[in-house]
Amino acid sequence: MICGLLLSALSVVSVSWAQPAPPYELVRDYSGQTFFNGWDFFGFRDNLTWGNVTYVDAPTAASDKLAYVNDAGKVILKVDNTTTVASGDSRNSVRITTHASYGLGSMWIFDVSHLPYGCSVWPAYWSKGPVWPDDGEIDIIEAVNLMQNNEGALHTLEGCTHSATSNPALELGQVSETDCSTPAGCVVTESKPNSYGPTFNAAGGGVWATSFDATGVYIWFWSRPDVPKSITSLTSTSPLGSVSDWGVPSMAWPAINCNIPKYFTDQQIVLDITLCGGWAGIDAVYSSTCGTAGPTGLCYNDSIVGAGSKFDQAYFEINYLRTYTNNASTFSSISAAAAASTTGGNAAASTAIATSSSTHTASKSGAEGPWKVSQGTLLSVGMALITLVAGGQIIL
Ligand SMILES: *[C@@H]1O[C@H](CO)[C@@H](O)[C@H](O)[C@H]1NC(C)=O
Ligand SMILES: *[C@@H]1O[C@H](CO)[C@@H](O)[C@H](O)[C@H]1NC(C)=O
Ligand SMILES: *[C@@H]1O[C@H](CO)[C@@H](O)[C@H](O)[C@H]1NC(C)=O
Ligand SMILES: *[C@@H]1O[C@H](CO)[C@@H](O)[C@H](O)[C@H]1NC(C)=O
Ligand SMILES: *[C@@H]1O[C@H](CO)[C@@H](O)[C@H](O)[C@H]1NC(C)=O
Image (cartoon, rainbow, N blue to C red):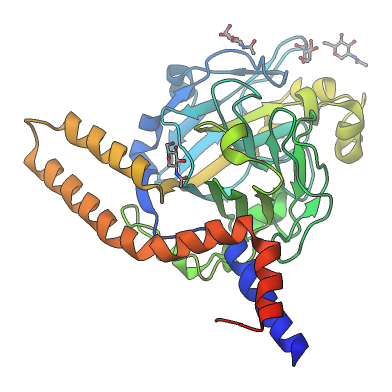
């Protein structure tokens, strides 16, 4: 009896801790023919992670077909796999960054059907503030060479951590690093199968959802067959109304160990593929999965130099990236900016904005309850549990 009550209390508390608070309004859909409108191309060599790549500019990416929309309407971002690279040269690749910055209360949903992999290949889907690491970095997809599991991480100044052990009610992944200010960041390794490499692609890809919130940073991953209905039923214009079928996130950095508003400013989203460099190219890392890929056992010499066909799998194939917010002030500033840009102009556009902002007001009042629950639960989870059990009031 007491055990039963305790269990009920635990499950109620742990669920609300990690749950984001819908409804979320759509901020932007990046997909298909308009995908590239919202991004800048880096346009020079990788001077950030010291990979042996040149990140090309937008015209080169288009003419060399390193960034394009394929016949199926999917977005391709890839490493050059047609050039034979001479010793001493680098290979071309892409790195793109959103024009927009996204604040607290954001949800990003990324649906991808193929991830880049291969010896020397180091893809990333991540976010950053203007100054590194002062403004924070969230790594959502990051893996190298022939690794099998995706890794997520935060990078911050000193003072933000991940707890040393994973609470399985909060996150499914395994803690690999706890201090977010170390070079590796506070890393959590995915524990679900098929999160990277050939098996991810063979399953038809999958979906990541990232909640960047004052209550914490949470990352969910689903392989294609497991993507929840609340996501598969979304369109390029719909709000995100429910997360009730999402389950426990793969990775969680609750604010109890990291004051998110202190360590993170608004984030731009980045997609890139580098080669070798400060992770994939470290001799011990490279040789652990790719040591027999060539005669020297060295990343640059065996993988970058020579034929492009080694990079036939080094591409992202993206269905969409959708950004959402449940932050009323962010949403009203987006609506105001959109309204200002259509002043004196397009009546249809103004009507659309008015409609979406009134939808927002209507649905937001419905979210007031869950939002308060998740805030309150976060700050007083231990106390709430004690109170619930000691007071014997289990309110479901
Ligand atoms: C990388 O190179 C670009 C172009 O030269 C430069 O603007 C940028 O500041 C460099 N970044 C770093 C971290 O050195
Ligand atoms: C690897 O490539 C570099 C740069 O081209 C070259 O200087 C070096 O001698 C090569 N190392 C081996 C072991 O082949
Ligand atoms: C490959 O990248 C490493 C790290 O930036 C650099 O030291 C090396 O010179 C590069 N190799 C070539 C041949 O550009
Ligand atoms: C909403 O966004 C504003 C502006 O970025 C921020 O100051 C505020 O803390 C956010 N509110 C919540 C509940 O995250
Ligand atoms: C390069 O990679 C693409 C997939 O991104 C593939 O379709 C193509 O056959 C590969 N090889 C060449 C020579 O283009």
